[in-house]
Image (tube, rainbow, N blue to C red; front, side, top):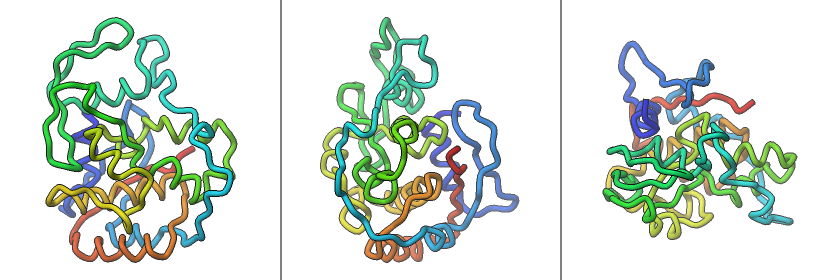
Length: 222
């Protein structure tokens, strides 16, 4: 299952019976499945602090799922999320292929035009609990391929517009993207047991109220 299809499955409408997509890359675990509003309510409230933050605290774009294939985490995400598969050359060079950036509803035809966004930015994760983690756990967070919604290929412009803002400050500009984004933000925080501040919770709750009949699924990080 591609990461794009997997991400959409995580946001499946509440049909009967519910089918929840499992983690990416063949990792077998039973996901937690909740209505979006209940998932938002399950987020722990916490004050945020950026004291001591540095991006270097999160080693990212490591060797990825397969250290022998020449692809970093970035390359793994690009390959997995491609709508039309690129040709993978030496040292994971990618030619051809197409991608869909759901933040701004654009199709991209060159991998160089894409950023890999941490759905919950590294600085936000630090603010929300990752400052207390050891380096190995921060590296695992920054390269999380086990749940497809943690990392997403989007246009460089939309990623840089977002920067390190939370949903109270920034939402994707594309029409109809808000429900998916709120869902993926919420499950990423739940997966990694990260807190949310009051403004963030208020915005997520308001979004969830307008995103009726949506189920979300996540697998708690090891």
